[in-house]
Length: 117
Image (cartoon, rainbow, N blue to C red; front, side, top):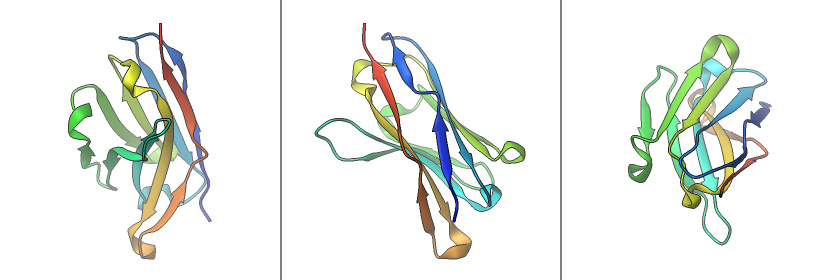
């Protein structure tokens, strides 16, 4: 079993930045990592994903503001969020998927991001 632990959420003013981290307890280099978010009353949506070799994919609406990266030596994926807007307010969830184990998925507990003045 893989545990994913997120950190870095909080309250930020519009236009500000936050950096979320997601650390895996094991097998990190094998995982495709992703961040999802869920705002109140809305469905969970994909923010971005990154493969083992570093190829990234972003939600169209977030391109240019959010950057997903990974450090395999630290077992950690990072989501840099810039120019934040109130509509970015949500619980952000880290996700890991292992393609070597039939895409078995793992989820973090979620971290709250609130963008408000």
